[in-house]
Length: 346
Image (cartoon, rainbow, N blue to C red; front, side, top):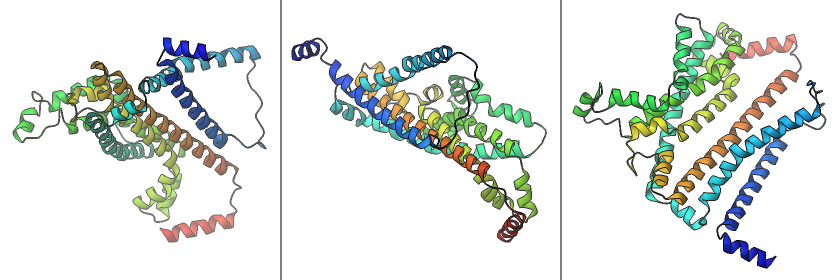
C-alpha cells in the first residue's frame, strides 16, 4: 500500500492534498445538511401522508436518481472543484490571495454596494408591494410590469443604459463633468446598476403574500383608531416578516454576485471599482488561477451561508403557519378582550 501511495503521489503530486480538502468540505457540508434535516424534520409522532402518486416504484427511483445525478454533475462537482482549485497550493497561498490589497478592496466594495443597495430595495419593495396589494388604481398592471423589467433585460444592457445617461457622452455627462460629479467608472455607478438588477426581488416576494392576506386586518386596525404607521408596524409587518426576510436574502445574494451590469459601469479599475466577481475575472485573465479561485470560493461560501439562512427562514415561516393553523379558535370573550386591548393601544 505504501508503494502504491508513493507511486500515486509521484505521478499526481497535487491530487492527494486536493482530495483531502474536498473530503473535508464534503464532510462539513454533510454535517450542515444533517443538522438542517434534524431542525426541519417533522416530529416522529406526526403521521405521514399517504402517497398520492400512482407510478411504479422503479419510475420514482429512476426520476430520483436522474435528479440527484443532475445536481451532482451540474451543482455539487463544480462547487467542489472551486474549493479544490482554491486550496490546490495550500492554505498559505489561499490566505495570502485573500489578503492582497486588491482582493481586500474588492471585498470591501462588494459589501458596501450590498449595504447600500439592499436597504434601498427594502424600502422600495415594501412600498411597491403595499401599493399594489392594498389599493386599486389605474396603471396598476403597468407598475407591476415595470417591477419585472430587470428580469427581462440583460444586465449588460442595464449597464449600458446607465452609461448612456450618466457617461461622459451621455445625456447628463457634460453637466456632471462641469460639477465634478463622477458616476460612471465609480462607486455610485456600481450602486445604481446593482439597485436596478436587484430591486424586483423583495417586491416580488411580498406582492403575492400581501395579496393572499388581504386588507381586513389593516381595515380593522384603522377602524379601531390606529394610524397608518401603527397599522404597518403592529399588523402588516408581523404578517410579512418572513417573506421580507426571504426577499432580503435573495436580494443580498444577487447584489454580491452581480457581474454583467457592474462590469459595464465599473471600468475595471483594480483596487478601486472591481467587485469580487470582477476581481475573479481579472485574476483569471492574468493566469492567477489560485488567487481567482480563492476569491471565488469566498463568494461560494457567502452563497452557502445565504442558502442556510434562507432554509431556516422558510422552516420558521412554515412552523408559524402550522402553529397558527393548529391553534384553537378564540372564544367570544377572548375576542372582545383582545379588541379592547387593541383599541386602548391605538
